[in-house]
Image 1 (cartoon, rainbow, N blue to C red):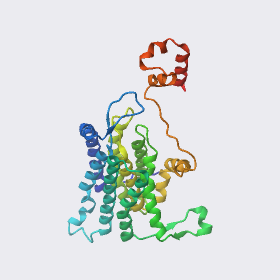
Image 2 (image 1 turned 30 degrees about the vertical axis):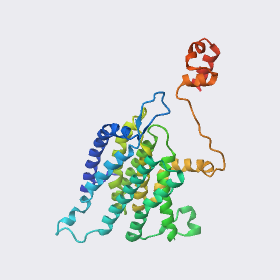
Image 3 (image 1 turned 45 degrees about the horizontal axis):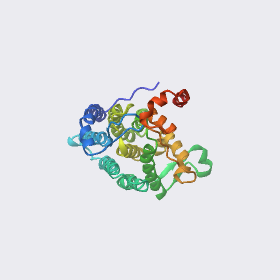
Image 4 (image 1 turned 120 degrees about the horizontal axis):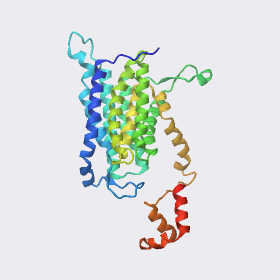
Length: 342
């Protein structure tokens, strides 16, 4: 029977900081609502009949809280090295991996917020994760440099047990960062969908890391937990406000922030292939949307009127002052009821 692994002191500190981050996210998002609206970082929910201004780009708040948690957490995994009797050699490779991961995530939050403000084109959105992943790839090259993968069982008779991909492995990791960020961004548009899917993926990764703590790669999974636990709780605080009926929008900032965080733990935690299993709905959505992305088939934009009242007047060519005529027509009422039930 599997026993729950004992958490180390740094993980407990990380968990406490994450809980505080959850509370901070809950408080800060409504506190900054007016600031975002005053800066015109707001929009209207087209799925609701009202025209209330809803602040956008709230992923920058959860991302900022996430970074503050991890900035304060940096010394704790290396506390033993502050005591000379317990420090044999400072783990520079672990420190560089932690700083490099934070740099990549910080760059992605900045570029995502720039996208929200400047409304960049899709061709530019593909370049942003590529640029932000360069520090991550350099950290992997200097710290690990291992480009050998374990071949899945169905392909072992052809390729053998191990396969050295060389530079193609770095191309794969760069593409993984691009895919993770844009996969969260594409599967979006419904209240709570971006934050909700990210919460499910992060919870799945946390469970996977906890299960693997008793294995041979404990350090890699502990490193992943350092990022996933704060991400889970800050995203939970954001989802509370983004859940239907949404009071805030997460913006592209959160999509890029979430995707890069997943890419970081998948690459530096050495389970990038397993990471793709947690992205199966996003992979399916990407493959399903690929013909439209490549313009093989048309991709028309669907537009729905804000309310059934507007729909009725647009259907029958009446003005808003002709509501009495609409109420007197049973055929019109029957059609509207049938549309509402469809």
